[in-house]
Image (cartoon, rainbow, N blue to C red; front, side, top):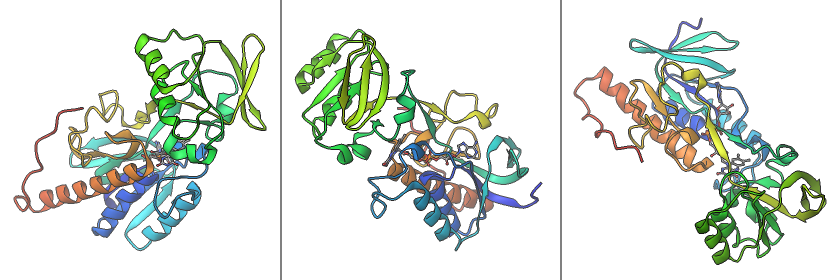
Length: 311
Ligand SMILES: Cc1cc2nc3c(=O)[nH]c(=O)nc-3n(C[C@H](O)[C@H](O)[C@H](O)COP(=O)(O)OP(=O)(O)OC[C@H]3O[C@@H](n4cnc5c(N)ncnc54)[C@H](O)[C@@H]3O)c2cc1C
């Protein structure tokens, strides 16, 4: 067991955790960042919409971030956190391989997992020609034809948004019955609907080939879809008794209803984008620093504003 007492252990080395580490490191805090290296956007390989990093590979972004953090008291562990719990005034964090660590606070920035619908072939093309976020990916495939898969999560607003990047968009329902308002929005957007059952999705020189159950197929430049996500909160059980961290987050700085636990990034109440994740990590870093000052010098800072109601 590492006998040091860290000010903060950060779980997750994506934009949220890294920027939290930067704020805390620059606040002279002793930080341990533990990361298992499988970020949500790894399938895409590169990131967009982050100034000075537009088109940077995720690996390079992370490596350069870590290099900059070397100037501060930030230690990295490439490992997986298996549990994190409160023990009086401390948090005890246990990893798969490097043992147990103690800290005064925990910044939990482990992100979410995207859950793909069970269409054969979809997972193989995920992040390449099967995409979700128009702002992240549509520029690269602009003016090609798009399929928008609406067979699991309604995606008609995604289809309407994509009309900025293509005027050849087809909405695939995969036999899901569309409610009237969804159909109405598709009609208003000028997006035709194909109701056939999707059998498989394959790579195609043009981008992606959709093979319907009846054997017909159609090719598109890219396929977009909205996805469900799963919060990566398993290590917080049983400390966290809520289904997710969003419901226990009490302010925009990542404080939660659970003392010493802070949240940032895709897991919190944030828009799920890299720059927003980084911003939320910075906000949480400031909240942690201020709360530690409150603890060390009682009365020196006013209490944070009362919790805001959940959205
Ligand atoms: C395919 C795809 C492409 C995307 N492209 C873009 C884009 O171009 N631009 C953009 O702004 N947004 C993009 N996004 C969204 C973006 O990836 C997220 O908003 C952003 O990564 C969230 O940052 P985060 O730090 O919260 O989580 P993540 O970046 O997911 O990082 C979380 C980290 O926590 C680690 N972790 C999880 N559990 C544990 C554990 N138990 N122990 C230790 N470590 C753990 C993971 O290994 C991971 O490294 C994309 C998303 C997807 C799915």
